[in-house]
Image 1 (tube, one colour):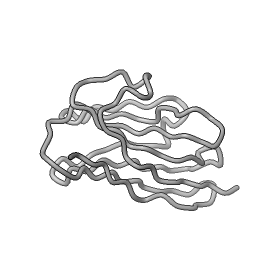
Image 2 (cartoon, one colour):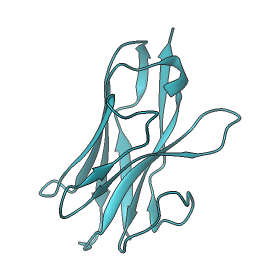
Image 3 (cartoon, one colour):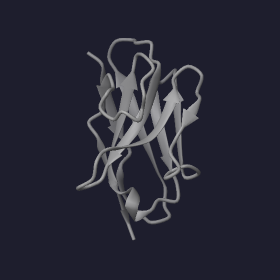
Length: 124
């Protein structure tokens, strides 16, 4: 059974940085892509970033572009999200996802596996 284990969340002041990790535990799987979503209180879950697992190609929306960087370490089976210049509006629970086939990351809930979520709180 594949599990995605997240870590790295916490409390940080505005302008600070955090790095989230998502480690894949379980049988070896050929992944197509992995990504990150977030959900703030009272808001819908939203797409944050995606990475092609083999090529390393990435994409993220304008809301985080230039501040957030998604990356992966294939040897460690781990996905990362480096978050810089954090703002209070980045406060949310952050979730990693993993897919065995290419998916449309604009469709929030159509993913093969989800992490348990990690809380990120940015104080002003």
